[in-house]
Length: 107
Image (cartoon, rainbow, N blue to C red; front, side):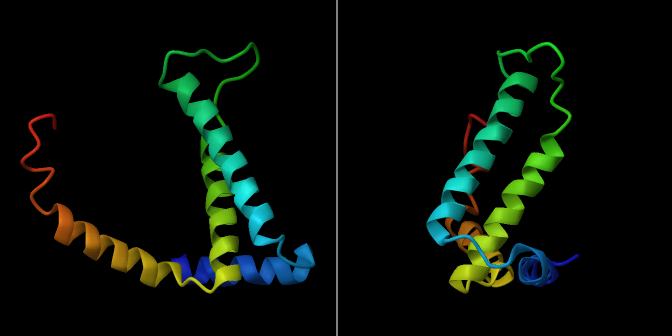
């Protein structure tokens, strides 16, 4: 699935099952919540914290998908073409950072 197809599929789902998009502010809060849920899993799986009994961090992919879903909702609501935005962002990073990381002794 392309990013464009994902944006269309999410929009179709909202129109069919979701009644309407939540407000942009609500979706921003939901996005923050979802990022926090992913951060919790990563901090326990790769960091110094441990899972509670019965937890194992097997929902990482699902949390990433939740983040992508809400980000796509926000893009659809605000008229952002994520394909174009990502392509522009890659060009920006390439121009700005073409030597930066290669010359970083920490890497």
